[in-house]
Image 1 (cartoon, one colour):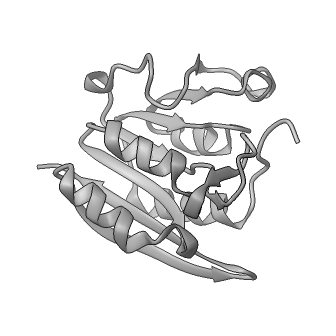
Image 2: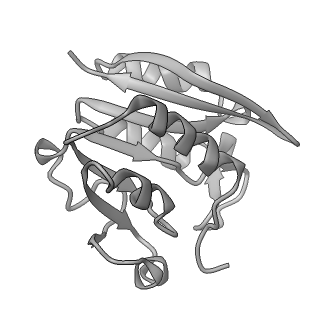
Image 3: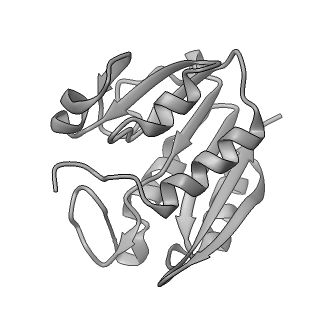
Length: 164
């Protein structure tokens, strides 16, 4: 697998983003993979799409593409929103889907680095969403769960974090 193809997790995040009606924002699609979130967001926003995987970026339909490891090389002060569907699968280090122990290796690193005003983050039950929310709260974000979706084998949570 060269990149992560959209699944129920991605479509759940897309549903939330559509309901949020983001407009006239500068949005980072972090870990863009196939770019389906970018395609949705760029209708009414300026979007920067990043991925560490060069093959994913080469397969992308164009736009503002940046090869980056999480938030390295990203000026967060120029962004309004970050949308992130991270590698979250527990107990694997596969670079496309793996999140290591509890599926949190990338999630925790992201939370420790993020500083933009608004964040949309996808996690699953195995990632311990309540703990992720506490970490975001500790970074100054007011958080709420915008969607919970049960699918075969997992429960997806979309968390919104917002700073004053």
